Length: 496
Image (cartoon, rainbow, N blue to C red; front, side, top):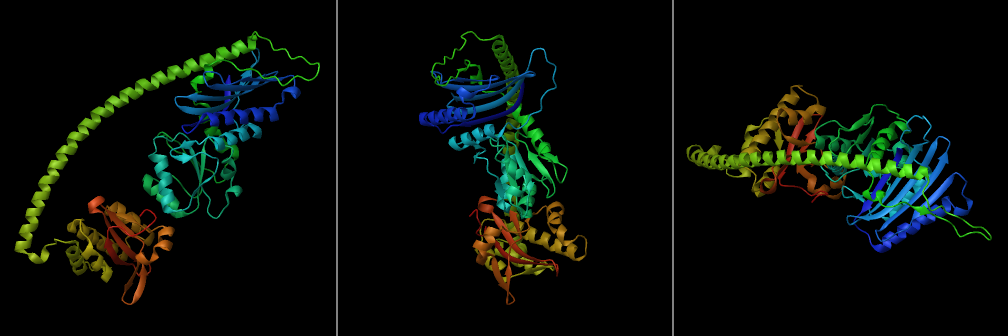
């Protein structure tokens, strides 16, 4: 038996009415596409209605000389969830030698049934609704959210097909047309802005996405797959996605009973007789199902053993890390006391070098930094800021000053400023703010210096909680000038 298509939709949010509506929708789909009184001789439909075990199954079998094509539909209450599972299979005839069929999309009516179920069932993957729509990624924050779903969401089970589609409608792209067909199998994400793409790569600390190629972001820590062709075919995109989908195990409820033949109301003087004894073909079909389930059980047992070993190793690692954290906290406390003593001694011996406040750090940096320009608003905001360590503020500004000196000496181009600050100086530098923040809170990012207005955007981030710090800048690439505009905690944006 060869599975050529598989999709599973499960939801925790359901009622008996939801289950009944789903059964009615499946029955209606069967009546429209496989009417019992007009079925060809080679097609049989069996339906197992809801019983005491809350399992509904329907199977459509198309017998051909080479084998049997079947569509198996299951709706069941399992572990508190309502599960809809659809699988398309091919079973070669006993005396036929045929090549293995590739995984492929089923006919449009089958995809339409899956789409209908995705609308009726409230299904989520990594806290995002599964509905067959293209996910739009148009801002820096959207890019970071996509990266978080790719790298950090442990509950994600569906792969994400990511494509850069600047200034293009979803309907004009090959991946956009696949979104509805792959509902429950994969998610399609379109990135519309290079800032969103750069934010994704920065979050992942690796150049995973590009503007030229389509990338499949697999779940569970599997390395992403980039299709290194500018115009991949539909089959090139679908092949790895569908191959992975058919490998997922079937719900355990598939072993519960067999569907019974579905017979329409008989026409006048027509008698429909259903054999009560299963045929040899049906028995062989059931045996193959049982063998597959046993293989799945053995595989799950093996995975469980590996998970238990990993859990034990992780517990040992956590204990060792806890001890390291305890030692580091004690060391940090000792260093804090030592730093306080040194600051006290510095204030006594050389009061002009002491920096008890953030304002003192910014004022000293203004005196000593020869390549930075300081706006009055930088001192005004620093005067109100409490929490961040003044010495850290001074260190960041000195590093910025050194970077400008290297920039003006043509050691790197303007495009390399961000990487130089990050890689050479270890600063968490962000090249700009989101378009939403610029439009909605533009006044907060605007300052006046020497009679001219400047828009702040680039900034250096440091600390969190009480020590949170943002140094907002204006960068002029023409004159190679950096103007320090505000030293504060956090200006308004879409996350505020």
